[in-house]
Length: 202
Image 1 (tube, rainbow, N blue to C red):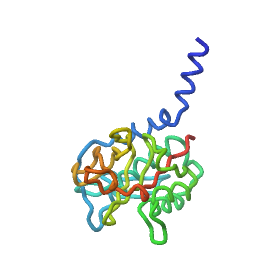
Image 2: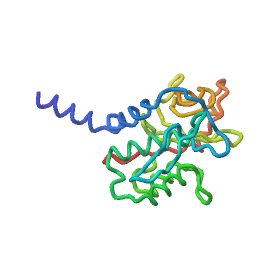
Image 3: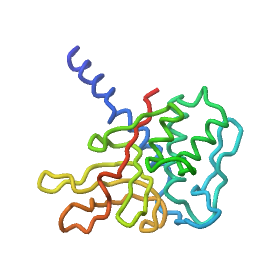
């Protein structure tokens, strides 16, 4: 019995188990709701507040990727007490880094959590359910997403499934994309330009 309890405690302490709160929060936002990637849109369908200050106003017509993933990250970070010693200005800087402020870099979400001190970069090949990802595609388009699982064929990782807000799902939803070097799948995601981060536990 003692050995079983020890094994259970180890399972509970794994990053996968801890990341379940990320998925719970991510799925608390209903699917769909429209996609609105237009000038002036904030990316969120409900306001994002922090310590009495409004970081993002709600936008009618739908969400977009950075807004959705930022809202999830903020909620999880607050629930894990990662923001208790952060100021409103810290949160505003976090928002700018997450969305891609001028002078930042292509890692976006990674830069944001590291600058705020609430998470760390994870090697791409070690991505797990509940990690936050900034991917880039052939042609230069990018996407901010929450990692769900790897897609494998013949023992090779050819893509991954994620949750975000995109036009193809009319807003929030799950989607699979494939890597540009995976033969026969018409993928466009660049492995070498896919960046992963994980929020601290507590």
